[in-house]
Each structure stands twice: as C-alpha cells, then as structure tokens.
Image 1 (cartoon, rainbow, N blue to C red):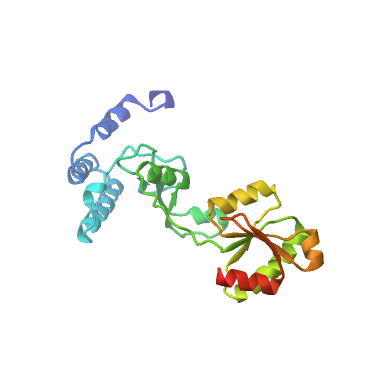
Image 2 (image 1 turned 90 degrees about the vertical axis):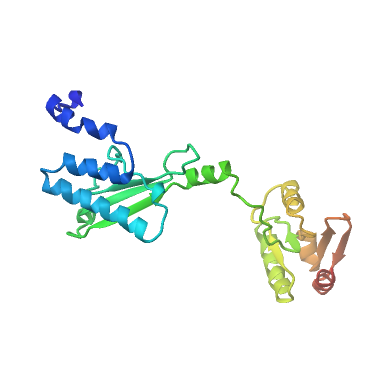
Amino acid sequence: MLSKGISKEAIEKVQPLFNFNGSNKDKLSQLRNMLSASEEGLKGVEDLQFVVNSIENIGLQSALLSIDVTLARGLNYYTGAIFEVEVPTVKVGSVGGGGRYDDLTGIFGLKGLGGIGISFGLDRIYLALEELNLFKNISLPKPKVLFINFGEKEALYAVNTIKQLRQNKVSAELYPDKVKMKKQMGYANKRSIEFVILAGTSEIKDKKYTLKNMQSGNQKNCSLKELIKILKNA
C-alpha cells in the first residue's frame, strides 16, 4: 500500500479491517464504529445489515454467509457490495461471483440504470461436483439401432430410413460423423445398442440394408419392410 502512495496514517486507519473476526453481527458492529463519521460508510453498513437480516428472516442458513471487508474483485465497474460463492469443503476457489454496479449500462448508452450481476464458473462447479462424488450414474436413452455413417450420400439414405423406423416406433440414430467403422462400432458397444445397420453403395443400389446383431454378431441383408418387422419384434 505504501508503494502505491497511500500514507501511513491512512494505512493505520484501515488496519483493523484486516483483523476482523467473530460473527457477522460483530463485524457489522466494528464497521459502524470505524465508519461512525462517514454518512456514506454507515449507509453501506445498513445495506449489509439488510442482507444479513433478510437471510435470517427467510430461514436460510446465515452461518453460510460471511462478511469479508477485504474481498476484492478484478473488475472496476462495481460501485457497491461485491460477493463470491465458495464450496466450503472443496478447495477450488470461488465458483461464482458478482456485485452491485450503478451505471454499467452507461457505457452502452443507457444511463442511470443500476443493477446486480453474478456469473458462475462451470469448470470449477464441475470440479467441485466431481470431488464431492455428486455425479450419479444416469442411464441415457439409447436407440435400438444405430446406422453407420459412410458419408453424405449414405447418411441421407440412413436419415430417410430412420424417419420411417421412428414412424413405426423403432428408435434409431445415425452416427454423427464419417469416422473409422471401428470407432462407430465401439460407440455402439459402449452404449449397448442392440443392432447396427450398414448401408453403403451396394445396399443403396439394391434398396437393402445389412442388419447386424451386436450380441450374436449375425448379419442379415433385408429390405425396409423386413427391417421394420425384425426390429419391431426384437
């Protein structure tokens, strides 16, 4: 602070800020004493008191709220209280933060409009959830049949067939990219999809489909009518 040109007298006045302890009530009392000669400072204390009282009145856990007068955020448009959200038992830093700003919209031409903003860090929330083992095993819906993607022409043939299969209440999907067949088959195995359909140049020419049972490994060349019948009865 001295290197920034702040006088020793000023530093002595704010020194107690770095030694605040006790409950939020105690901290607010100390702030009132420190700022007793400042009308603006006392107004800020009353605003903090309003937040503390409101949390208690609506039945939230006030113990989770901690007043920290040394908190600072890296953006200079805040004009009032700032806040950060942490997960007490996980050391990932703040997972959210924000504060009050009186005229941020002024830089966009909308003067005199105050507000409060907050943002959350998705990466940090993910890390906290992972560390606390809060992810549950969820069985995602899966199709009965997966079409292997051989390219643009083949994909269009598959999509038209998928539409007809779905109309007959058979769930079907097309692998989204033209990648190596091994990867597409691996995807089907990983999701335990029952059937895979291969529809390449020869199948399109004959208006047929090669249907593979992923459990038995058996393959069958069939028409659309046969395909629908097999999959509906499987």
